Length: 422
Image 1 (cartoon, helix red, strand yellow):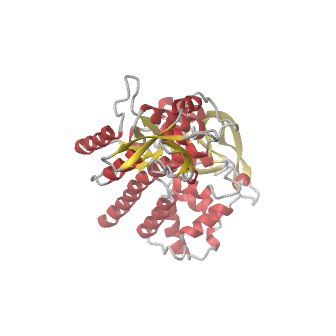
Image 2 (cartoon, helix red, strand yellow):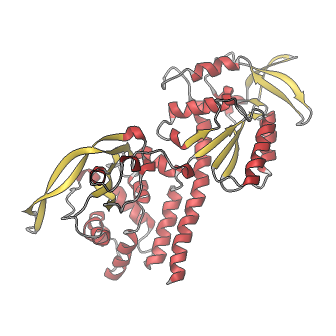
Image 3 (cartoon, helix red, strand yellow):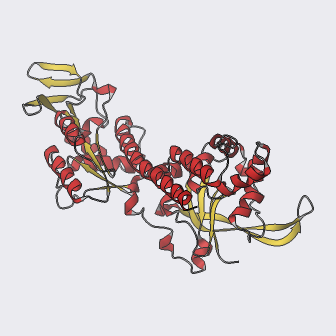
């Protein structure tokens, strides 16, 4: 029979393999996700409820990888497999397999997967000797209730052929909308393949591949340190997707001018890494953000500015004419302004930059606020994280969009190439 490996939500398998023939799902998990998870085996033959032969189910707890479905979905999005890509994949499969996507649509599949009671499924899928096509037709298809959804027998066969190639990540996306599944963990049961000598532990528990990670380039070491700690505190389940320029020997890109020249250099050498350049939401940062956007940026390089926030529209400022409430968006909102600040926090106008035609300001006591944030080792209800969370949201959204476009193009090329070869 060989050694089996499966990816499941509760008792619903969404992907499985055998021996060394399996899909690498390691990017869905982190090293601390190893846990004791259930493995299901067929035991003695017994009589089923309908009188047909069935098999006793033996459950054993062994080591595998386990992570909450909601957190796995965030990691899938960063891999580029977003909900819109799920829709595009379904459409490509419908065209390739020749079934009418209006007779059986992506919405039909979405509703079917949203209504199935994942917690009540039996893990007994038979003797395990059938291929995935038979598995889908005999087990998954009836459980989803698709036989009553309208398609005739011939088209139903085309649907089954298409859905047997539906990626596990699309299934996981749809299961995340299922009330009985959204609170469950995604579990990757790899122990038997490892024990059988078909793969090593390092094939399953390993860092995210460099091609799927994002290098964050900021204006200074403080920005990188604050954003990095923000991910560790607020988004630890995706923090490993983001790398920062090595600062051990001194941060090499201090200042917006240096960052702009660095971007020019990356473009000229056609860097292969996914790079996100982050400018401050101040006068210099806003000017260089617009300047950088005018460059011919490749698909793997994105430039963003720290988000403009409503709370910055009436922020205390100090200048030659005293204290006033002013809008510091695109004028003086550096990364420290996104931390938990006291009510008397203020920006001091420092100088007029003739080159960009604007005054530059700086948060008074910014080093103190930065140290307080960097000293945090765990999320605390006493600290207000809303503003820094908005920064992380922009970065994650930008990263997701970068990968989403590539993934959509990959699916389009995959199935159009197959169609042309027929």
